Image (cartoon, rainbow over all chains, first blue to last red; front, side):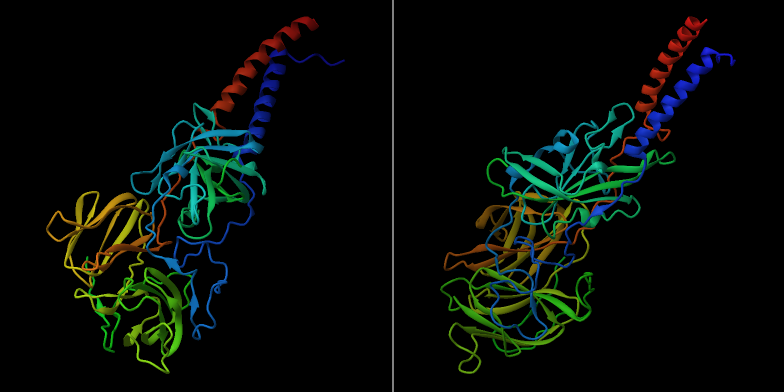
Amino acid sequence: MTRPRPAIVVAVLSAIALIAGLAVIVSAGSGSSVASQGTRPATSSNTDQSDIAPQTSPESVDAPPALPEGVRRLGDRVDATEIPLRDQSAIPRQITIPSLGVDAPVDIVGLIGDGKVEVPTDVLRTGWYQYSQVAGASTGSTVVVGHKDGVRQGAGAFYNLGDLQLGDRIVVTTEDGQRLRYEVVARESFDKEVVPLAELFSGAGPHRLTLITCGGPFDATTLGYTDNVVITAVAISDRRGDA
Amino acid sequence: MTRNIRRAGVIAAAATLPLGFALAITPASAADEATVSVLHGIPEGAGADVVDVYANGNLLIDDFTPGTLETMMVPAGSYDLAVYADGTTPDDADPVLSADGVEVPAGINATVTANLDADGAPALNVFVNDIESIAAGEARLTVRHVAAAPAVDVLADGAVLFANLTNPNQDLATVPAGDYEAAVNLAGTDTTAIGPAPVSLAEGANTIVYAWGSAEEGNLALATQVITGLGAGPDVVPAGGGSTTGTPMWALALAGVAAIGLVGAGVRLSASRN
């Protein structure tokens, strides 16, 4: 007959099991790399006219008969008298992701120092990069960033971005109360050394919502996560009334 | 920084884009192509209300009207440009404007403008567009004087940004991206010729503002052309708070509290077994 183990050993073994279990749960959600899925809309890195709908083929329906050989039109004819003016009423103020249970405020953020994007220190708040497009713009990327988590604060609003699936909905509520719906078309994870920030932040190309947080393994030498997790979504309704 | 402008002029004259120009070849453009935009900057009532633009004898732009802009990719090379009044063609009429031998090097991004010169006569001008990379949070502003008007000052939010700009010249600067109130004053005076008008200068874009029209005819106005996709983007998005051990501290703290609870339970259990 076996002797019962000393109680303290049982307790310690249980505690270790619990911690290990929690670590597994935590790492499954945060530490491991997010599998990439889907495709971001192609951003034309060529210099095109920005204030018209993205061009998907060289010939628009309005093109006159045959251009000279080797010549192709970029976009439609533009009314140059329309002075570009940002629609302040379309600045994102709230972001809702039903499948993740996210409903977070969106602050306005800029850059701190040289080229470093400011991220709200309250991890439950997200930030709209003020130099990116407003919601519902005709072209370019609307960028919203948020901390994955904080040492003292725990999980952030964007903690589970890596769990988003293609087709999941995201709703952006704008300054004037309009609700714009987006649909996830890509979920990607990039090592920060190679994340294509110029493209993700570009004002060119089809309009898209770009959510950025951190992910991947935590790097103890830099005290930061190694990756950026990026969600790309495209608009699925007109900017009119409640979505 | 002011770039010299090669003026094509009304009479067919050789116009050359500076070949020494440092080309910033955008990845998507083919090795032997250039991006050329054409701005119809002649105001209504000046004899060019509807025109057709020909390049090397071939129709390029049909039914071109004042205040509109077309952009196209063209093979690098030499171009004879000609503007015909609506209803006329190279076969049956002379052009209202022309410029022969306009050299277009590969990789260039340029705008050809049909506009009034300082004295009010129609003219063709060729401007090179600056497509150098722009830092995060910044915008490029280019202003071009293509109006039948004297020298002007260009103001942003009430402060003079470019002084004493004359037709057919340009000036440009890198400024923080954002919304500005733009105005064009008669040079050295507080007399506003155009504006003030709000304008958004987008990050990573070259916003080109044209002062066009005729002071005499009272139709001076602003036109814009925006070249996007020049942004270098930010350097980093530091969006992870994290912990010092790989597993977030808050999760470890939770486990620690639970473990302490278990130790207590284990002791009690042991006691009850005996």
